[in-house]
Length: 291
Image 1 (cartoon, rainbow, N blue to C red):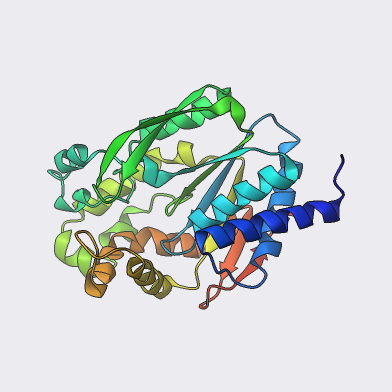
Image 2 (image 1 turned 30 degrees about the vertical axis):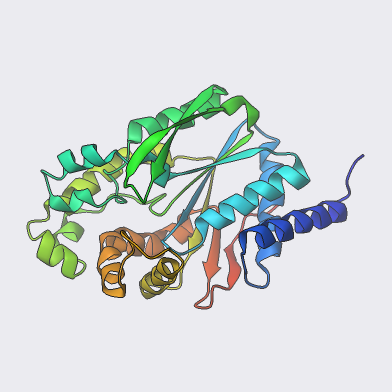
């Protein structure tokens, strides 16, 4: 049975509502329409090649994981395009590797910034997908702050790889930009700029991973939203070891301020698709390619 365009939308809406209900998601008005338009455009692009890659960028709290997951669900249900979603967070270095790395700078114990991922493993997974080979995907436990195993996935089963990460698409800065600390964390914990120079140098090596067929950017209103939304996320975590206070959250996001602000300044113009988020988590198209 061939589905008409309106039938696909109805089917996609049903899947979207079901997933939101099961996961307890309450999303802004218009979210589904933008998600469906994105899925429809990607479906057209996928006709041009056997496998396609999509990079999704967005700061902490922007909802990139949710958008990626819902996009994969709609693509499969309405367009028969199976997609696998990988997160840069899956590819963190092990705890012991980051401890060894912290000999260069204690700040490198904190995962998240370029240089704290197993870039070779991420590139391997991307290449395995493109070849249709068995993909070796690590499993990382944030509660244990360590890698806990691997999962082997057949890349041949998927037509689209969605790779999401908070720093996806960021480019290295100039030496002059690095010389000026961005915040109290950089001034106090990195007075000689060793940490930020290391992160910047490693970011250059990430460019091959960031090279995807399509890029999408979830653009937050400003950096102050990151602290507020990240704190809201923290409220949803169970009490216990690892849960941060508000002050700790504000200190924590300073690790990501430099790259986040660079992306807010530049990446909206560079990405194929830019979705602008409002202070209330509303969402609208800022940039979208023609069909």
